[in-house]
Amino acid sequence: MFEKFKTYFFMTTLVLAFIFIGKLIAGNTGMIIAFIAAVAMNFYAYYYSDQMILKHYDAIEVTPSEAPELYQIVRNLARKANLPMPKVYIIPDHVPNAFATGRDYEHAAVAVTEGILELLTPEEIEAVLAHELSHIKHYDMLIGTIAATIAGAISLISQFGYFFGGDRENRNPIVDIILMIVAPLAATIIQMAISRSREFEADRGAALITKHPEWLQSALSKLDNYARSGVIHNADPASAHLFIVNPLKALGGLQNLFSTHPSTQERIEHLEALKRELR
Image (cartoon, rainbow, N blue to C red; front, side, top):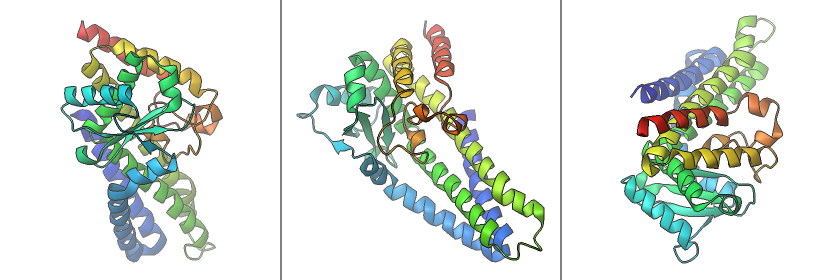
């Protein structure tokens, strides 16, 4: 319950920050425009973000006859989680990773790369897919996508406001600092907070579904090691939060400093504590 409260609190804060930036740039008119824009962006993210993400990564929907083992694992897990059967996609990429997307239970999808099917054991694949179904169960894909959309919009409107917002010579320097540094940084941190808390909850959900936290521990360790040396095609910061491990880890630098994922070691430690609970 507390994690849900934190998530919705952070999302509300993002929307209010977006409206506040609009007010800084153009007063009450800017505030109204920002509010309308936030509503429009959320509407678009709600209905179309899943198909955009799947198309972005060239994901191919598969049938039970095309991927029988994968399909059977997802079907069994969906039954255990009391969820409708999501659509199943395979991404033609040898870097192992996976994600879930969709606005609700009836429009959910799970996508795995060819690489993850080659790297992991059936038990580890089951744990990864249980993690993704846990995201579906708690509407994390929708929450994360909306958070990423608004965070990106805050950064964009802040830069626009700094360069084109009124008379810069007579403008309060504090406003410039807010527009160029504080607002984009705050939006990024809030997005990170939302995504990281959701990852821990999805790990916990996966362990409870499979009853084997060690399967996910092993999978995360393998995926993290591989992620240090390879990047999925078309991977970008806007969609990185969807994946089970950070797809940009191999790039290093600021990509890791502002990662939307907690460290793999932290996640493994959380699962270790859960193992003791389950015993």
